[in-house]
Length: 133
Image (cartoon, rainbow, N blue to C red):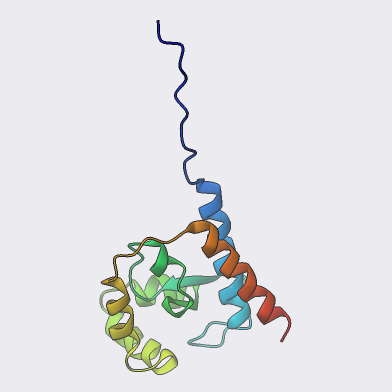
């Protein structure tokens, strides 16, 4: 009988990812001064939208890939509506610059590993900076 124990490496906690998601939301709302970055509306339904997909941790937590929108009109019925998608792309370009989609697509091509612990630290530091200004 084999009495040796298998030591399992701890999985990256989903709760850590959830913490980073909450920190990213807080950071984005601070940066946008709790207003939609497209309409300037401010309410409790503001959401953070990823401008391009988030296939990896780098793009998921890249601040340049995030924009604050109202939940219904701008997010769900705007950027996620195929009939209005092009209109909202041009609005986002007017806020983030004409080359935003090109830059983010280039980042999408990077195949790097990201450390969720370092991401959390980075997000916390960026929040501190914004709160101190």
